[in-house]
Image (cartoon, rainbow, N blue to C red):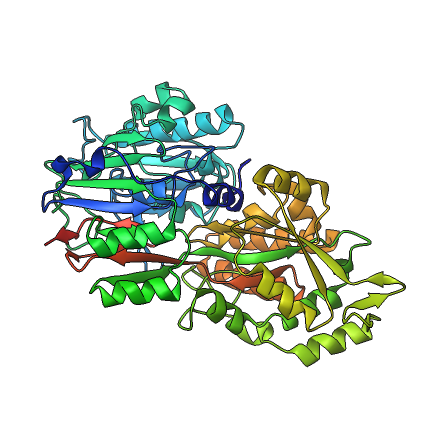
Length: 540
């Protein structure tokens, strides 16, 4: 995987896009038509193909026109039947056998049978190769070597090594099953929506990058997962998603009735939340599963954060509760660990992350950093200065800077473009970097911290010592290379302890998906990925 989500977010944040397109004409004004205002489309990688896309808004759209083999309960994390009625995992963890529902078809009428699923697997593998691993779905098919149709309704996936995350992967939008004919097209054409046909309750009518995406109701749909009340046809005729750059404009459109759902990338401000409530609408919210918005230290030799005492002092010097309430409002949840609280196997580490300024000062004193006349600490004539590259999106950077100053740490903010930040990180000029990963499985973190598969091998290698990297890889292996759920849970618990104890991850805030929902909309629901599920949605 060559693209990191935070860098794409930063680029999108500076786009000056406005809502426009056919979604605003009279034909979309009926009671069966829903309008959703999204964060702007990806400016550098516009894509609506399930396997390739990482843009969370488009994965939300995909969820409603392309079904998956399984589904995941948002409340428990349990994997439940969907296109597959049942499954078996071999004792060695390398073979997954799925029994499919009978009678499922793609929206073009073709059968969704075992051969179609096996052809999808072949298409995924080919896409990983064609994109040199850049397709986001590559992170979901680690070790997948192929699949075969055992009979018309039985498909068998083969892995080169056990991967306990694979079952959860089959519930995701990135492994949604599409008409395999799409894989005859180029990855670029598929990103543009050409040939992308799913089996969902809506049909992808069209995708106009940076303007709008439109879904239309599919007749005859009858195989919703067990997690929805309405397992049949959609109650809406059409859904139009447009892209709005300004948060205030998006909120204003909701309050005025121009749109039915305002879906921001960042949480609403307290002021916008109050406006939405006053208008009679409401804010739905759910933490995005996966890696929290986290700082990762550069622990390379000679860097201040190579000293674990300095990393621990940094953790103690950050007042996470004040940070959350100041930036996002008084009711905003405080981050509790390396993962967001909706992630399966999440273990809260709140006690270890508690604000303790005297404790931070004591650690720095003992490490030989003394406070100078300017309020910042120094050691052997070198100031305790941490380079923190940020983009225009970086939330609360100045507040973080002020908090660390209380401990005598000089956090130097360096605002960079997206391209500059990628180079800056690769070259190791930073002391702190931030990133995250959205997936309802803790294995997502390996794509940040395991150099063998990470988005940025350089960041992964610098986030811990050589021994630390090896320990992280060992814990991931214990969690992933097993069919024993208890072993997986224990390994992820040990991993979360290790990450905080060693200061490998320095969580900053929980990532929460907000949605402003009109009082005319009923049946709103989040998926386990905190995406929009439309099966039960109506508009009065």
